[in-house]
Amino acid sequence: MTNFHAILKQYWNYEDFRSVQLEVIRSVDAGCDTMVLMPTGGGKSVTYQVLALSRDGVCVVITPLIALMKDQVDGLRRRGIKALAIYSGMTPRQIDIALDNCVYGDVKFLYISPERIDSEIFWARFSRMNVSLIAVDEAHCISQWGYDFRPVYLRIARLREISPHTPVLALTASATPAVVRDIVEKLEFREPRLFQAGFARGNLSYVVRQTANKLEQLLRVIHNVGGSGIVYTRTREGAEKIAAFLRENGITADHYHGGLANLMRSIRQDRWLRGELQVMVATNAFGMGIDKADVRYVVHMDLCDSLEAYYQEAGRAGRDGRPAYAAIFLTEQDKLTARKRVDLEFPPVDKIREIYQAICTWFQIPLGGGREAAREFNIFEFCSQQKYFPATVVNALKILQLNGYMLLTDESDHPVRVVFTVQRDDLYRIQVGHPDLDFFIKVLLRTYTGIFTDFVAVNEQEIAHLSGYTVERVQELFKRLWQMRIIKYIPGSRSSMIVLLDERLDNENLRISPESYRIRKEVAQNRLKASIAYAENSTECRSLLLQRYFGERAEEPCGQCDICRESRKKMPGNRSETQLRIRILEELEAGEKTLHQLVSALQGELAVVLEEIRMLTAQGSILQRPDGRIQKK
Image (tube, rainbow, N blue to C red; front, top):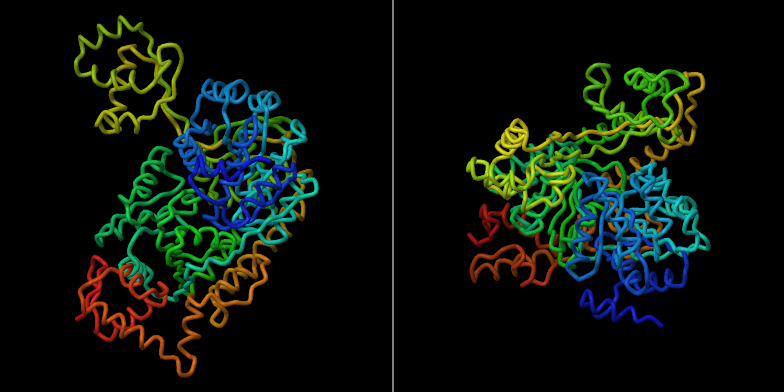
C-alpha cells in the first residue's frame, strides 16, 4: 500500500493530512472519478500533487489563470519536483519542447489552460503521454449554471476520448449542489465520488457595513486591523483610484487588474506576497491560487453578483487560522447597480444577432463562409467605430459562443520577438565599436538563448528591470539595433482573437437556445437575489447563511460575525463587552499595543475586540494612531 504520509512528509514536511485530503487521494488512487469541494486555503492542490508523486507518468492540471500556474510550478520546483506550464506568450518552439519533455522526460506535472488543450500540437502529444491523472481546478467554470462559466471548459471532456481509463479529479472552493451535479455530468464521471470539507471558517469574521463613505470606512479597517489585505472592486479604474487614495494616506498599496501586462502583474503580486505592499487593490483577476496565509482582511467595495464569488474571494483572508476579517461596504445604490449589471449580461436577442452580423461584416466574411476563421480583434476599436458599448459586445459574444457560433479568446500578450541577423564575431566587433550598445547587447545575450538562430520572445519590462533602463529606453535601443540591421524586430501587441466556430449565417438561421439565454438569465438573477439577501440580512448568522447556501447542514452560529455580536449585546445580563473594555484598558496601561498584540493578550475574537475598540475610541478613552497602534488617553 502506498505510503502517502511519507510523500507528504518528504516534500511538504507535514506530519498529517487535513480535512478530507487523504480520503480524496485514496478515492482517486482506486481509479474513481472524484469531485472535491474544499474552501479556499483548504489544501486542494496537495491532493492531486501527493497522488501524482506516488505514480508513474505526468499529471495534467487544467487551470484558468497564468498566475496560478506559475505559482504552483515555482512551488513544486522549489521542492525538487519537475513541473512545467504552458501559457500565452510562449513561442511555438517553447511549447513544443515542453510537451516533448512530458512525453519523453520525467516531468511530473503539466499545467495548462483549457484554451490550449484544444490545439493540434497538444492533442498530438497528449495521446503519447503516460498520463497518471487529470486534475481540473476551478471546476465550477464548466457549469453554465455556475457563477464563472467559461464555455472553453466544456472541451476538457474530450481528453477522456484519448485517455478513457485515467481518473479525473475536479476541484472547486464554491459550488451549489446543482452546479456539482452539472460538473459531474459535463466531465463524464463514471460512478463519481464527492468529498466536501465544511464551509464554516471559524477564524473569519463576516461583516456588512452600510456606509455613505466607503473610503473612510476602508481606512478605518486598515488602521484598526493592520497587516496584509486585499481590497476588491469591480472596475480597473476603481482599482487604480482606490490604490492612489491609500498611498496618499500613507499606506503602501498598488492596483492589479487584467489590463496590466503579465510581467507587471507578476511583479506587483510578488511585492505583495513578500510584504513590500500592505494592500493590493484589485479586480477579481487577483487572488486565485495565491499562497499567502497571513491576509488579515478582505474588503469588498461593491456587492458581488453571487455568494459563490464572495465566499471564494473572502476566503483568502485568514488562511493561517488566525483571526481575520471579511467585509462588504454597501450603499443603497449598490443593489440597483448590481441588478443593472445582470441585465447587461444578457443583451436582447435581436441585439446579439445585430452584433454577430456587424463583426462578420467588420472582417468581410461572406454568408456561408468563414468557418474556423481566426482574426485579431480590438474590441475597443470595433465598439468605437460601430457605436457599441464594450460590455454589450463581450456579453453578446459569450452567448454566441454557447450556441456554437463565435468565440472571443482572452486578451493575451503577444511579446516582442527578436533575432540577431549578424554572426557572433561580427556582433563582438559592433560591441567594441559602440560602447553605448555593448551593455544592452550583453543583457540580451545573458537573458535569452537561441537568439542567433530563431525569433525569441523577449520581455521589454524584464530587460528594463535587469539593465536599469526605462522601458522607453529599451524600445529606443531595439529600434536602433533594427535600423543598424543587427536584429530583426517584431513589436509586441496585446489583443484578443475572434474565432468563427461555424460558417456565417443570416439572422433567420442564427438561433439562440433558451438554455443559453432565458434560463441562464433567471439563474443569474437568483444568484444576485441570494447575494442581496445576505447583505440585507440583519437577524441570522452570516456563516450559517453561507453554509446553507452551499447545501451544508449547519445549526451552530459562528459567534463572531456582525449579526452574532449584535445578538449577544441584546442578551439580558450580558456584561461580557463591559468586562472586555476593562481588560483592554488594563492592557493599555502597560503601554501602547497593536491590534494583534491586544487580541493575543486577551485571547479574544478579532471582530469582538474591534467592536470594543471602536466603542472606547468613540468614548474618548483610547486613541488610535495613524500607524495603527493603540494607546490609552
